[in-house]
Length: 373
Image (cartoon, rainbow, N blue to C red; front, side):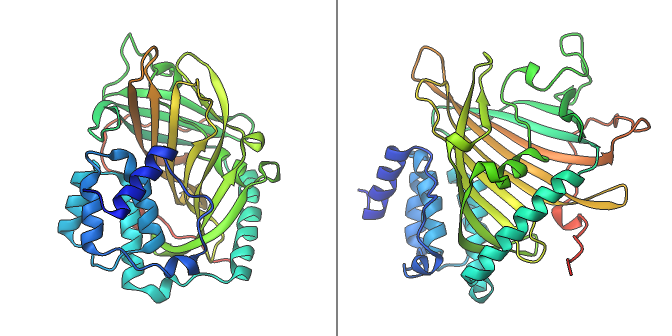
């Protein structure tokens, strides 16, 4: 028998699909609700295997109310098991745990601070776009799929992609290896990422943040929370870009392309005014379009290129849900992307021959930004 919360979560999920509340109540109003108890959270968690569509509503509930219980290793393991090791739910519950342990560190910013940080972030991001160096980087990508609404992910392949960025030409994606093996006759080295088929993405380096802050996007921002990202204090803003102002697109393997709106959350450093994380979900997808949902979560950190520091992506978790042509069957696709070995692009740069899947350096090992005066 569902509790009142269960019924509310399932109703929201069924009515809204991949739910993301862009018009959440203010932080002060959120705190008026009692935090989730361990029993409440576990009951909701146990519904996920049977009702995976309630995941987004559960995340929203945790964000709005917080938690009143310690996050133990046993509970972390249970969350991983019941959610299919869902990255967004893991991050959300860890955020709630940090807030529970040190509530004073997560006091909401004043309206003046929130507005000032947002405007400084806009200026800093657009300026950084103009100052981005030409570089080359390797992407390690694990592509997985799951049938229906399940979280039973099965690995499709592992790709190594070489990406070059040049201010004059933008981003260029080329295949270096598939499943850890050098290219063969069927998959020629240098073939573009998109030509492989399956789920692919682009724009993580410069385009996504530029489009978020450019005036033409008319992005609506609202400060809703605070957080700690790799020991950096951040203000969390919900945002929305209407379809009419958007340049975000979805493309099928049949090369049909549509423009979509998008909304989500962005984490901005309170001291350096740079984006540390962005989470977005596509909106206003045409009802007859095969791709039914798309979400992504990108983490940024400071990377040294030619003895200078630049804010660049370190991980991306991209998910899409597609309707199989001629049926109501849904297939989920997931790309887990890691970025390695940023280098300045030039005639002397050699593509790294090692195409293994070893772990990248942890975020804590990455260089820290210089504080602005």
